[in-house]
Image 1 (tube, rainbow, N blue to C red):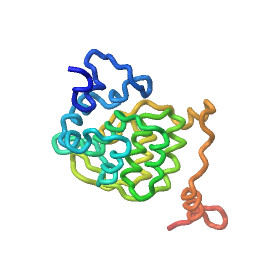
Image 2 (image 1 turned 180 degrees about the horizontal axis):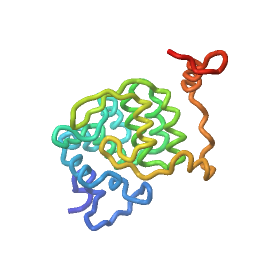
Image 3 (image 1 turned 90 degrees about the vertical axis):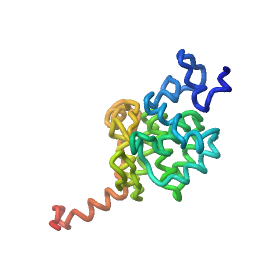
Image 4 (image 1 turned 135 degrees about the vertical axis):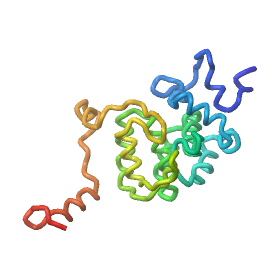
Length: 213
């Protein structure tokens, strides 16, 4: 059986470790998702029925249909969200396409999907530069977990991507902290967000002391 005859995505996962395609962080992009989760995704009905054969353009149609973010639920079934993350890793879309996804203000789950991909696929300094401006997006997101649904927000989700080791049940690539990147002159000091300044103004009285509620 040739690679072209293998099920979608499995053609990139030669059991002998042979891979000569594009890499991310010097490795096969699909290996950025842990094996057990990757296998659950590839065997899921969503992958087989909705993600099969997608390209960067047609994936957009699936992404705008997303109704929640999350990793695994109900007996460790993968969400559509992480199925599309694996598909993005398979496609390895151009930077311009990802930026278009991120800049789309209408579809918040498309933005969340692109932000997650940027976090796991791009160099650390680019991750901070690209994702930090999204922390002014305070729209609500539904998060699905093994325990059910709960509410989160776009800015909280972005902060999780920048500070946590695991998000949506996916182990994120290790990344230097912002302070470390500043020390290495790879990032300029972070400028306060407009909302940060506004909140400080509201808390401070005319004499500069913090006012009581």
